[in-house]
Image (cartoon, rainbow, N blue to C red; front, side, top):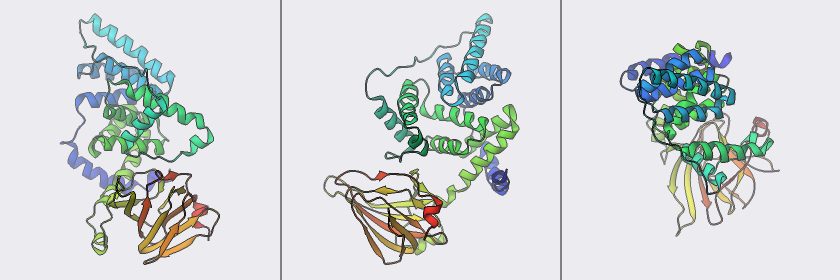
Length: 372
C-alpha cells in the first residue's frame, strides 16, 4: 500500500522518539488490559481474549468494567464479536469462581431516562472533541438517520453509562479500530480524541504494540503508519520556528475543527461576549488548506495579512487575496476561504456573533478549489 511505504521514514523517526519515552510513559495495568481485551474482541481471537480477560481481572478491572467494555465495543466491532466476547467472559468468570477467586463487581452502569438524547449525545461529542459546531458529515447527508443513531445511542446511551471513563472508552476504541484495519479516518479521529483526554504518544504506540505482538502484525503495520502520520505533524503546532518570528501575530493553536481541509492555526485576538458581539482571530492556512463551505448570520470581514489566499462565494468566481486586501462577506452567504496551493495565507477574520454561530456546510472539493 502506497501510504504505508510513504510513511516508512516517519515510522523510523517517530518510533525512535517513542522508544526513548516508552520506559517512562506506559499505560497503567488496567488500561493495558482494556486495550488487550478490545484488540482481541475486534479480531475475534477468543483464545487471546480469554487470557486477556484473566489478566485484566488480575490487574484490578472489576467485573462491571469488563462487561461495560464489551458493551461499548459492539458499537465498533458489531454484535457478533461483542456477543462472542461476552460468552468468553462468562466462561472466564465461571472458571475463576471455581478456583475460589472473588473478583469485585464494581460500579453499576446507569441508564438515561430523561432528557433529549440527541442533545445529550451532541454535548458528549463536543466534550470528547472540543468542537461544538461540527459540520454535517458526508455519511449523514447520505443517510441522515445514522447521525441520529450516533448521537442518541452511541454518544448518549452508551458513553453516558458510566463505569468506564471517557479516556478508557477511547483506549478501547483506538485498540479496536487499529485491529480492524482499513479505517484510517475513524482511527485518526479517535486517536486525536484519546490524546486530548490524556493518552500520550508512547501510550498510543503501546496500543499499536499490543495489536502487533498479540493480535495481527499486518494490521499493526497499518496502525503504526496511521499513528506516525498523525503524531509527526504535531511539532508544527509549536510556535518556535522562524516563520512565527516574522509575523505580526503568532499563529496560535492548531485548529481541530473538522470543517477545515489541511492544517490551519488560530490566534483568537478578541472573543465575542455580552458587551461586544464581535470576534476577531488570526487564521494561518498552510498551502492548500481551506475551510468548508459555511455562512455567518451577520456576515464577515477578512483582512489579508500575508501570503496568497482564495475567497469564493457560492455561484461566483474565486477571488485571490494578497497582503493588505480586504473582502466583505454578506450575511447568510455560503462561502469558503483558504490558502493558495503554493503559499501560506494569513488573515484576520472579524465576525459578529449577534445572531448566532457559524453555520457549516459541505467540504470544498478539490475540483472547486482548483477551478479558476
